[in-house]
Amino acid sequence: MKLNLLSCDSIRPDKRAITACMLEISTQLEPSLAHELTEILLEGDAVQIEVADKNSGSALRALRKLDIDYEILD
Image (cartoon, rainbow, N blue to C red; front, side, top):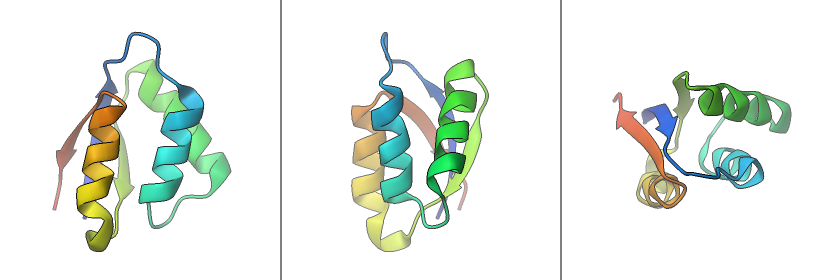
C-alpha cells in the first residue's frame, strides 16, 4: 500500500519519532532516507512511502498518533 504523507500538525513534532515510525512501517527505507523524508515532511511538502499490507493498520495508527495527515494512494 502506498501512502502520501501530507503534513504534520503537531505543535512540537518529534523528528526522531517520525523517522523511527517511517523506518518501522516502510518496506524500502534506509535510515538516511527516512531522516531526509522527515525533514521534507516537516518543511511542509508531501512525501510518499510504501507500507506492507500486513502492517497497514498499525502503520496508520502510528501516523495518527504523531499527528501526521496522510492519504492512501492504493
